[in-house]
Every structure is written in structure tokens, then in C-alpha cells.
Length: 142
Image (cartoon, rainbow, N blue to C red; front, side):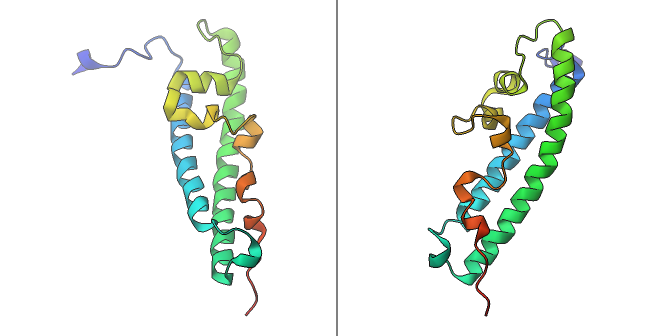
């Protein structure tokens, strides 16, 4: 029924709607990837981990890096588009992209307003500081 179409984005630019959805999707998947690292790379240090743990952690870190690098490139391109748009569209008060995203999609874009992340660069950091040492653990040769 067309009468039930959401009015939330009636006056919004199509790119902004899409960018908001992209950001929600990114934060959702980033959370999943972070949980994988948390589970797989939870050992205290390289010396306390088995060769299998180190190998699994190394693979999880590589997967995380590929994930982040892919999404970071997309974000950079979208950031430039947003930067141009926010100057020309009435009603966009937020000059910087992360502020716009955290206000527009709230908790669904929580990774953009995470208190542990001070900059966008930290958001796309690989590996996350918390797992930096564990991601460098080389498996013990047999």
C-alpha cells in the first residue's frame, strides 16, 4: 500500500539515504568481525598461545584486514560525495561525515560514535589496537 510509505526521507537526497543504509550495514558487519577477533584472538600473549591458536588468529586478522580495507575505500569515496552535498543541501547541519551518520541512524551506526574511537582513521584501523600484538603472533613451526 503506497499510503504506508515512510515519510522520513521524503525531502532527503537519495545518496544520503543510501549512505545511511551503507553505514548501518558497515557497523553491523564490523561488530561481527570484531567479535570473531575477540573470540579467536583472546589469548594473553604469543608465548601462552598454541600454534593452532596463533594460526587461527592470524587468519582472522587477515580476514578482518580485508574487510576493513574494502569498506574503508568505499567510505572514503562516499565521504567526498557527502562533503560536496552537505554544502549544497538545506537542512544538513553536520559538517563532518561521522557526526551526520551518528545523528541520522543513531544506534544502528554506533561504530561511528564509539567512545573508544577518536577519529575515522581509528574506526578503519587494522588490526584494532586491542589485537595488534596477537595478530602478529607467528605460528610455531612443527
